[in-house]
Length: 80
Image (cartoon, rainbow, N blue to C red; front, side):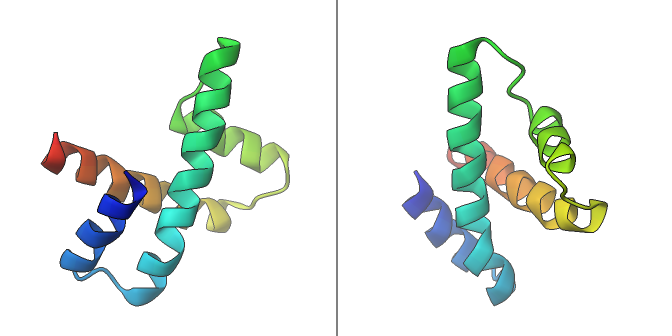
């Protein structure tokens, strides 16, 4: 799924910096989400960002994370 996302990002002409970090960010989120879902815990994007904030992430650091997840959501909508 991530490989298809990378190809899709390239076709969207997203800035190279974003393309470089976006798949890794999304993969980390999906792994976290999978674990949380198995635990029966909140596995939403907001819960993920709240956990990152509690771990020390700043608001500025969360902006590209949310943007990467939003890009992935768009990718899923176009392929689904």
